[in-house]
Amino acid sequence: MGAQSPPTGHDVELAAKAAGGDRQAYGELVRRHGSAVRGLLRRLGADSATADDLAQDAFITGFEQVAEFRGEGTFAGWIKKIAARLYLKKVKREARLIFSDTVEPVEELGSRDASGDAASRIDLDDALKALSRGERLCVSLCYGADWSHGEAAEALNIPIGTVKSHVKRGLDKLRAKLARSEEGARREAHG
Image (tube, rainbow, N blue to C red; front, side, top):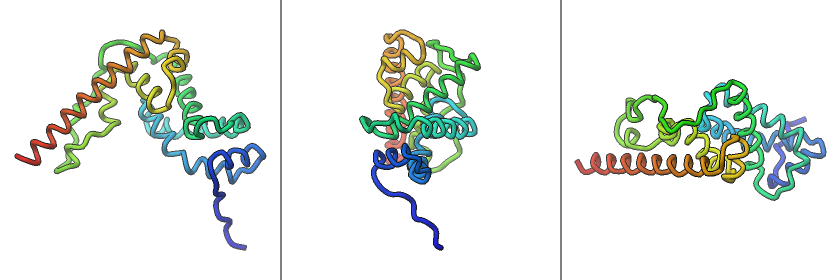
């Protein structure tokens, strides 16, 4: 007997099958969205191993709660919210959640040894490292996990105005980094 082909269909259909106990359908959802969930967790600040562990925990939780997914948003957004909540619980549990206006020390963003275009391209993960922990979390939750400012404020237990301030400052810093990176690439191309 040959290998079965993976289930196909829209995420909503696969989630409905998974809610009925179809593990293969849920496995396809994990395959489709696993790297995006791990990427979000790394952008929130998790190292690769922690991101892998939390992504696995998020998909296990998602499988247990898949009947609650109604298709009102995307499955990717739904599972990313679960993953982000798990990350925030971990950070709070480890008492490392600090919201300050200072930028934590990071390596020099342009220090990677590369040549040509690769050296001038902005890497979002590297750019996010230039943000304070609060800015990084708020930007990643509101743009990476598609949370509202209110959802982020509630999850982080901070005022909504603080979330908005962190998001604005974080986006301003990312835009400035992008502009510097593009300017450097133009100079290198013409120089």
